[in-house]
Length: 171
Image (tube, rainbow, N blue to C red; front, side, top):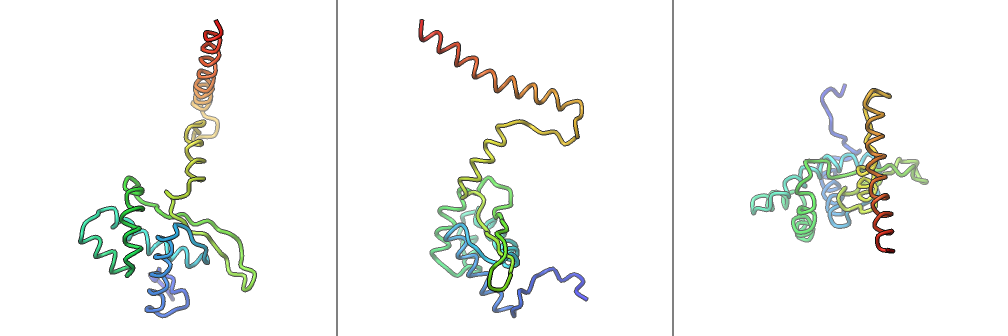
């Protein structure tokens, strides 16, 4: 029985698994997005998120602690100079895992793991979604009609002001 054993061993001994996760995390920090199997991506997320949290504090001690995990000077520079300022205000959840299907050779489930703050396409989508309508958690409760009416008025207001300013410019 495997009660309380939460780590995925990935079919490797400890030293091999540590080297694998170290190399994957160096690649993720360098390239901001990598493709791998789903099991490795989940193990990598658990390995790299504490490193990213430690990198938010740019001190000599935190640099040494992160270097003991990564063992790569270029990755350390990239992490502390480029990544850490972008994730400074984020309270956690620095990585996103997106399933990409199954590998043709052996049928392994593949996934793309990426740093959340470095995907400009997803950032633009979430910004427009936040600016859009506000959803209620209840199914058609009393407040749902008020929220849609308020957002409709907010959307219509700029259009009216543009029409008024256009007619004023013509006169």
